[in-house]
Image 1 (spheres, rainbow, N blue to C red):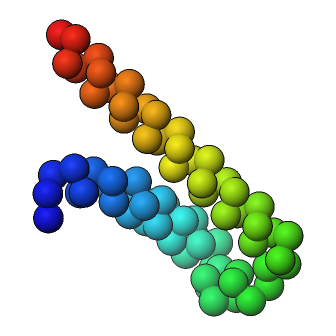
Image 2 (cartoon, rainbow, N blue to C red; image 1 turned 180 degrees about the vertical axis):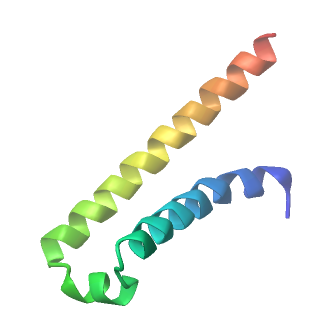
Amino acid sequence: MSESSKKVNMPDKLVEVMVDSVFRKNGIKPEEVKNNLSEKQREMLKEMVTDLKQQVEEFQQKRNESKTEE
């Protein structure tokens, strides 16, 4: 796996670990959450994830641009 593909997957893993940690702290089972979401909530979550991915990509791009300028 190339270095750039590892960086792309890293935010996904980080989010997964954080969500899992919050769920465990509060005694929530992921299966229960999946079954209790309305279609509107699912859409909102998908949009939120898409927005967050875009923000992370923009941040990484700006960071890489600033590194190349140095």
